[in-house]
Image (cartoon, rainbow, N blue to C red):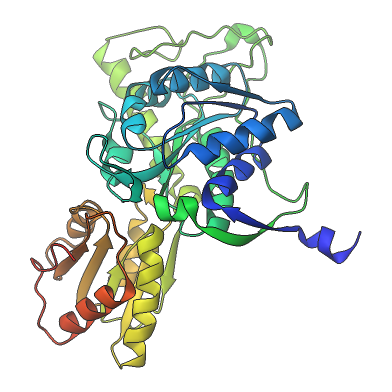
Length: 394
């Protein structure tokens, strides 16, 4: 094998294309979706790639049906995904709740655009951060990852499938329109080198099988269709048999397991990047394309003698709390930069608990935050000229 083959293939890809290729590499063999800017290239790429590997692509009549088809395929034993943006993501929320309660593994890519409503279909935003976590009704488990480069889109999509399968949970991959349409060089891994995960399948006597039994890792094995295990799937609260119940004790136990499995596996789920945080006095918290501007701003601030650092959550939900607290330990002030009216900043304020000032730099005009804006804010904070209530919009 030559060196180029051993190291993988170099490709120039859009973020959206990388998402599709990562999904196929992760074992995705079913895609159902509906075209919507700025995510449509994911569907286009999947339509080309899936037939090559014996997979199925289907364009559904709308986003609601798309999410339903994905759940049906996954319950049939196939790794499945969909992709959307803005209004389409809103339409998927009810079935995302079904996936969370019935523990149906699936992946949803949401390429964020300006909103609300139809908003700005061709302009970037980071306005779906809280919707990704709390968009469906009721207390529910969900994992959300936020890549910040085309390469990371590829590998975080692979990881999204691994997490969905390992934990039997819906996983959302969120990135903004800039990342979705950005062209970068990506080294795709050589075939067979990716670590892939399949969901836990039922084993042993079918007579003793309980489809939602409590296991030590809180993730019950799933019945593979045709293997003889009886399973009942419903969106109602259910006992470990899968059949509906409203018994308070049973419902409490079921929901505690459902929510607890993410806490139990935080070490597997959480991922973050830290830049110059060891001695940072001003800590910037940013994700997606905004984090790339923040990285440059931190470097410029350091060159001017300001001890700035960057904390970038790659996993947005569950938020990497332990890593964040360590990064923020020595900071005198925090700056949260995001392309919305203030969403992740609420989580940072909760974690800080008033012990340190938290400032915000937001932008909601359809343009990305640039390094100069962040640098100016960092310098004002370092000089004591910025308060926690300032920086409402660039």
